[in-house]
Length: 307
Image (cartoon, rainbow, N blue to C red; front, side):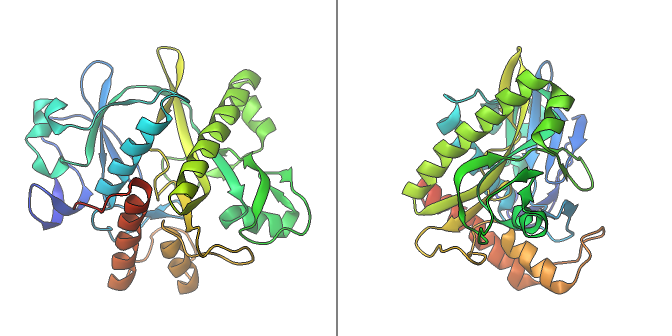
């Protein structure tokens, strides 16, 4: 059965790694376990593993996988007019029988279309923060694209920018320029990825702002299903996005966030060299991170977390 700690079998609080007897593991990523589900279907299980600086940490975050699943589902529904997505069902009863026999997967496992993945992360930045701010301070660029001089940390950009990166299953993702992206996937697809990414960001930013959150940046993954560009993996979660409180936001600093920046800040202050293995997280950081994820869900959806 699924290896887990804490909580009841039906609504386990912390799932480190899934193990489904009788199912074929397709891929185990930094956070998600992917299984074959027959034909052109896969089952994706969101664990409570946390990666920071592209390293999976040894300490899980309670409820994280379930929150990610709920937020992704919320955004898939809201963005399907922009681009189709891979989601088929979030109902565990729609999964093959071997998955229904593992109740710990309820709320974490989704049935999706098997897509031909494009091995690129598509990042949209509306504000200059994180690794973008680090590069800008050193070179005046983000993803090799020049930006105006004199920007402050966390400042809103005149227009959101597209900054792609290579996709790594393990190890560090690498930022690439738009020209490098075009050489990897072709000019036409590179343009489609950029336009779709920025349209998704603009729509999500406007919605989040109405809910009291600033979507500073986010990353998407895409694939092809039946020849059509399709949004895959996750959508606008605290794992893949940077969310700030709109009421307290001001540039010239790093605003409090509803995502894993809290963990990144702790790790940076700890002196860790950002190479494997990652350090264990203290209980107060674990609790604070879990709370931020639940608050992000509540702010976006207008509903209190039900777990």
